[in-house]
Structures are given as C-alpha cells and as structure tokens.
Length: 206
Ligand SMILES: C[S@@+](CC[C@H](N)C(=O)[O-])C[C@H]1O[C@@H](n2cnc3c(N)ncnc32)[C@H](O)[C@@H]1O
Image: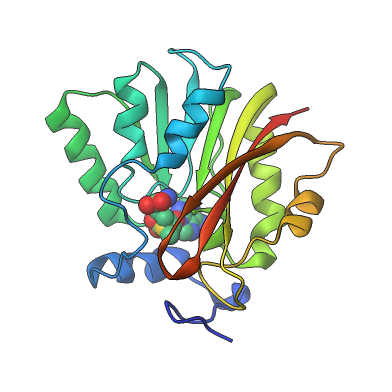
C-alpha cells in the first residue's frame, strides 16, 4: 500500500535516477529540512572521528550535512543519483568556499578509492526499495574500514509502502548483523512530520 507521500516501488522495474530526479524537478522534496538535521549534531557528540576523517553521505540530496561536516574539517563525499541536488550542492559548496566531493552515482554501484572512516546514513536506506537493502548493507560495510563508524538514522513510519520505507528495528538488527556490526546503545531520535521519526544508532564496522 503506498503511503501518503509517495508511490509504490517495484525494485525490478525501478529507475532510481529518473524517479528521484522527477521529484526534484517537481519540487516534491518534503523530506528536506533546509538545514542540517539535529541527527548530525547527535553524531558529532558521540563520534570518535576527528577532523580529517573521510565521511561518506549516501543519498545526500541537497546535503546540508555535507558543508556542515566540511566546515568542521572533515573530508566529505556526498553521493546522490539525481543530478539536480548534486549540481545545487556543488554550487553551494563553491559559494561557501568549502571543499567536498559530490558524486552523481548509484550508491549501490559506487566504491571509494580507499576504505573510509565514517558514513552518515540519513533517509537514504528508507529511500531504497527493501529488496535492495541487503545490497546496500554490503556496500556500507565494504566502504568502511574495520572500526569505522556508521551513524544510522532508521526511519520509523509505522506504515506500509514508501518511500520512505519503515525500517523496523528488529529488521535492522537482522540486516546489520552482529557478526558484521557492533551496535551501540540507542542514541535517541529525530522527529519528522506526520508522526514519523528516525531512531538513531551508532554502529561500528567489525
Ligand atoms: C528522501 S531523500 C533524502 C535526502 C537527504 N538524505 C536528506 O535527508 O535530505 C533520498 C535521496 O536518496 C537519493 N537516492 C535514492 N536512490 C539512490 C541511489 N540508488 N543512489 C544514490 N542516491 C539515491 C535520492 O535522489 C534522494 O536525494
């Protein structure tokens, strides 16, 4: 059943670039806060990473967290499949005199040149059809060095369908399995509209 925000997605016929670019072209970006999410501040309170660490922001969209991290001295790579937010984010970085890489790519196919130190995962997993979640988990695991941090903002919608798809915590424990990830305590939550919220967790890649 589609939820109120969107259309159902069949992963076998889904064209991520065309679908997401159409949303940007239509100005249908209700997920966008217009500023960095409070979730980022929560991670920065908890992280062991220090400036200079390489952080990837998959599905970054307009990516307000990318300049926020770059301004703190992190090396940042933002990824998005849609051209429109990539162009805008690059422009904003240039205007602000900040350095970060913003790559237009399918995050299910992209690989870094070398293992990275951290991943900030915000409304990216929940944007993917659940059939793609195991491949996405393999990507996140492959990108990170052992001991690297995944700050995960697991979207809680309590509804069927999506995007955003409900990331039930028991399912997340199975997807980000204990043999591959160490879970830290619940790191709080960030509220969205319509009763949705993100459950925040800091995971360490084993
Ligand atoms: C709900 S939006 C969230 C954007 C941003 N993380 C935020 O919180 O504002 C999901 C984003 O993921 C991007 N996306 C969806 N599928 C993707 C894929 N396979 N590879 C890269 N980006 C993807 C979309 O283009 C979109 O910008």
